Image (tube, rainbow, N blue to C red; front, side, top):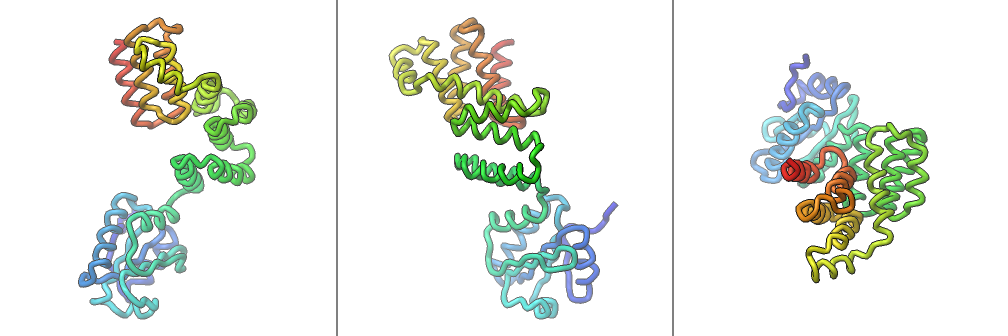
Length: 283
């Protein structure tokens, strides 16, 4: 078992063994800092916290320039805080001057994420911004490299459905075997989007305002809200359908909740919360 510490002090004498040699197996982030300079001390605290979070995926080497100036001089460090990233014995990147946690985290993600993790992180940025074209551009490159990757195809179909290209989504899904893990997510989204195409959310809301017992209007509101990405409100409407009439549209309150939660993917905290609420109500 590797007994080397994740965070350690380094100087000129230990640099070759502790940094260069170690970087052959693990990326090393080398921070030049000084306690007397607040931004440098803050950079040290932030990187130490990140080192704990990333649990050994990178090593943090600390050089206090006030105590050990020789290494900083050899690597031509002009001021602190200053970062050098060492990979395979070479300087792979550097940052000079104060940096926010987001920048430091992005730097470390670039060192530690697998290709699949990096792709997912990039996709999530575009999806959070509802930038469907940007997300599709990333997947297009990924599929060029791995044209038979079923996971990429499922993401492609899911995004096409979210974008409103229902025919395109169905075409892509037809190329993915039915027993492929996670296939239910784009399938559920496509089914909801297809149904929502003939619905009008504004009219459904107006009908509900006049008559909260109008379950057809509530159902249309749930479906259109789910397609628009308002999952919590959509699930609230489904719960209300369950409360008012379990038999409405052959148990549509429950089945639509299941379908909406499927679009949210595994691990969704929101889905877990509503799944517990539904279970508690039904039992």
